[in-house]
Image 1 (tube, helix red, strand yellow):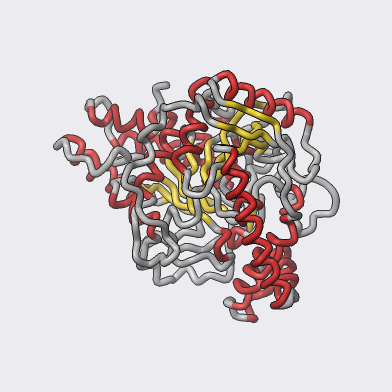
Image 2 (cartoon, rainbow, N blue to C red):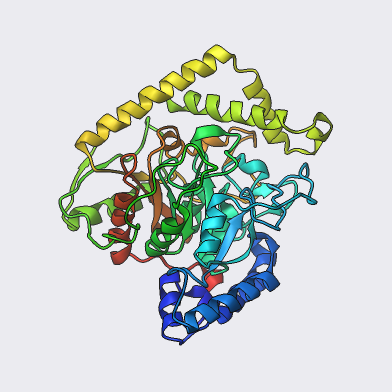
Length: 466
């Protein structure tokens, strides 16, 4: 590939070091892609080209002097419009937020990426306050899938996924409160990791509470490891953050899966799976056996996680709505208002019971991983559906969690979980394989994803190739 926008972060830094490419050229290539593709796909709701080129020139000088700040110094990077970035309005896809700010702080993830020299090019789209599994908002409109613009890219990190898939930015910050990294990663054919809760410090904490994680969305597993190594560095503003790891996440990335005990669950709670999705995921699982892992099909016996998740998510939505002046409620997505109303009606005792049930679920998965190093299953039971809808079929109500049964359980348990592309449907839509690891074993999830990717690199969507 000759277009710098289609190079990985690792390839870019290698070219920077050899002086065969400049961070300024990479930033301009990213901005050119945004200018060309964003009108059709709506991945970005804010582009900061002058600022990005200024940062790229500073990076260029550091590489010339042989003192880059990190391996991602000079790499084009996007920030989801739920995550604070100094000087940029964080509107969260909502008409209720005052663009005047003040916007004087970076979220921890943004601060760490700036310190690593990443070149921030702009903000990616999200549904209002990230409340659902597709990406459209009353403020920024509909975001579309680069494999088929009539389809949704999923959400809520849909803009970040489209940016990664099309080369608008190599590194992209996503957030995941019920699948919001993995859903769009699965629908757009990129890699996305929801790390262990607390691995990436957050500020402010999400109104949706301790189900919400921050993580990398990239075209390659290696880039996600590089990005996570920067994002996981400590920040005193997050009292839930995990201790900073002593090694970076690229170490051991190529060690493979030989000898690992891997469980494969074709479904969860008998949820139906599209035949093309099921076949592609089953074929991907065979790859791990071929690489020397001990793979066994299992029935994952979990309690009904839907009510547990809804109690946490819907109460979070009610908490969010309570923080917005009542005179602005009419500006909010009706679906979000409906979810918040349901959350407000949940009795305190029921919420407390759901919290205890969540704890039992977490213990059950901890015990499961005493016998199994990893769990494999589909990221989603269906391929991407029509853009502009909340649900794939039927009345377009607010219960988006009904079609994402494989993602939100692992927000409740706070485990690391990733989506890696594993094939295409006959209609040319991506299919995702979900890799779930024990709590704190983010590096193991990355390693397994890399082992698969090394044999089955993800193709680019047609719009990215044109």
